[in-house]
Length: 199
Image (cartoon, rainbow, N blue to C red; front, side):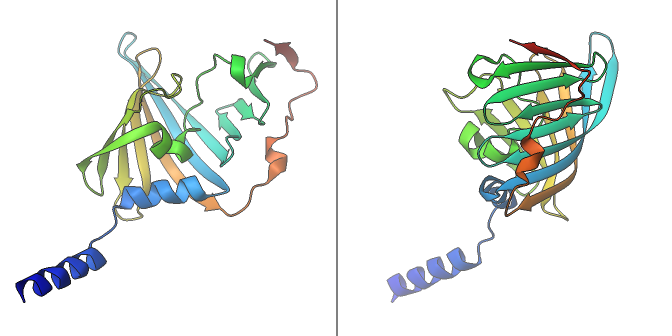
C-alpha cells in the first residue's frame, strides 16, 4: 500500500511540477526557423569610466545564418561569408566563416545556448549563470548571466565580459520566434559606393 501511495505521489508531482521557464525559452528559440530580437547593447569601460549604448536588431536562422544591425553597422552571415559593414567608413569586410576572427556579434548565439553552455540556476525562473562547455567556439563569451522577465516569460537581459574584458549588457526589448525565414534578409545588400575588402 505504501509503495502504491509513493508511486501515485511521484506521478502526481511529476505531472504538476512546473517546467523551468528558461528551459522553455531555450527550446522555443532553438526550434524556431528564425528568431527576431530588438535590443539595446551597453558596453561599460572601467578604464575610461564610460558607457556606450546602441540600439540593435537581430534576425537569426536555425541553420546559423544571421543578420545583426547595431547602430548604423551591419553584420551578416549568409551561410558562406561573414560581412561586416561600417557605415562610418562606408566599408564592407568580407571573410570566409572558417577564417573569420570576427567575434560572434552581440546576440547571434542566443538560439544555441544549450549547445554552447551549461546552465546553472541562480534563482529559478529569474536568474541563470551559463558556463561554456569544453570545445566550444572561443569567440562566444566564456560565461554569462541571463535574466528572465517573470511576467512575460521572455529574456530580459544578458550580462557578460567581452574580449576586451569590458562589461556588456544586452537589454532585450522584444523577442519573437517564427516558423519560417525570410531568406531575402540574408542576401548581402550594401551600398554600391562601399569599399569591399576581402580577407
